[in-house]
Length: 243
Image (cartoon, rainbow, N blue to C red; front, side, top):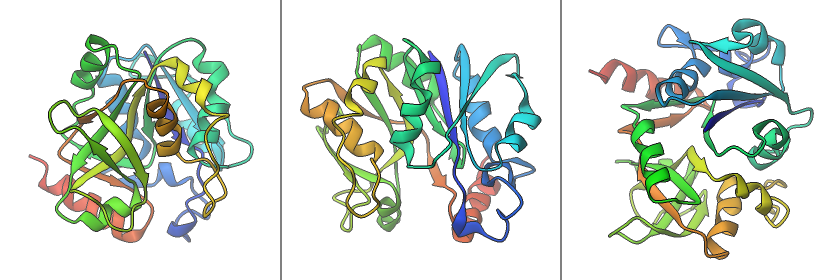
């Protein structure tokens, strides 16, 4: 099991802070944002960490070198930024034939449960296990994705990218575990007409439509993907609340 951390984004909505700094290196709670994902990857017991870098890549590479807390790090350059699925495609040669758990380098998760998530993924021999959280403010789901799932076993039948009207208070996160065969579905993933790039929920939907076993897992208590000043304030509030 490898960890794949995506850290190639520009962070336009956080300018001017990201004018001279990679968004993932902005400090939040007295440490760079990317370290929340690095810490979670190490706590989950992965064998190797692969980081996809792009904008100001040298800041991340110079800061962390080839290991973090004793776990080997390898880097992949995403020369052109075309979204998360493109980043996965860039990382495929370095992931090799391993299964992997995905992290975003600009996210904060309170009380993460990645070790238990990996255990379920292995025990049930799933194709994909999507990390989700429950939210009080369903408008936050429009920033990520919603799911339609069987309430008894959390098997997912549909993923909905940035829904205008979420169907529940369950919000998808970037924390997903994949069998290596997920790479086979990249070419079949449609291009989102609004964003002009392939979206992660659509990639996973291809696996669902092909009959693979895809489930949801409640991966933590609170989650923020940092894109705006409002997201930073929300994450700081969660970190202060954390016991």
